[in-house]
Amino acid sequence: MNEKNKISVVINTYNAEQHLEQVLEAVKDFDEILICDMESTDRTLEIAKKHDCRIVTFPKANHKSAEPARTFAIQEAANPWVLVVDADEIVTRELREELYRLVSQEDGAKGWYIPRINQFMGKPLKCAYPDYQLRFFIREGTEWPPYVHTFPKVNGPLDYLPKQRKELAFIHLANDSVHSIMEKDNRYSDNDVEKKAHKQWGTGALLWRPFWRFFKCYVMEGGWKDGPRGLIYAGLKGIYQFQLVAKMIERRQNKE
Picture 1 (tube, rainbow, N blue to C red):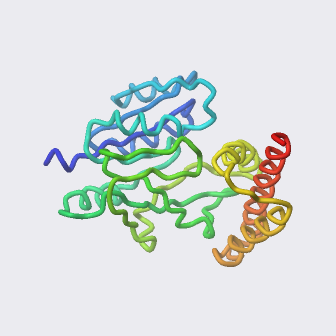
Picture 2: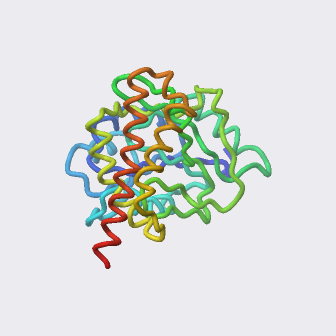
């Protein structure tokens, strides 16, 4: 294979043993699997070594997410192209074949958004699809901001894999519950407060941002098609916005 068409799979991990065996089995036919571990204390490294992964370490320190380690992990990859996979995502055979086809083309995009199938309360959620993730890109010049809910900055044009072809989507193994979403949202909103510190949202945003996010998810994105699960999911989206704006107002008042 042409060296310039080789792909490294990069997986950031911290105590990721739950799904890692399945994830690594699905990516075994790529040119390299790089595990960037943040000092796991479970069987993560044992599983990675069993699958002959290359392992690098990024100190966990006080980091609450993998984002601070993303750029480090990407630059540690050995090949020109990088596919970033979470430790609970499955890469299908069709997706792997499509990515190699894309990098063999001349003058194509330098990064691609990949759709993702998410589960909530035990079933795939229609309103959460395609949930595009910018995870496949040229390694050179790419940087990932150290915040959750951000995408990498890629040096070149971007494109999207077609959402109609669901066989090209990541399969997200995490089966989110109401509890897990609310627990994660509390952590994510702490991070978002720092990222959006320049925003001057006030009391009005406590009303319109939650309402708009609920309406967008439930009506525009089709949450109603998912029945009660869709209604609950859309409500949680609205609650996140209320939580975020409330924390931003609290932060601003504490500074004053």
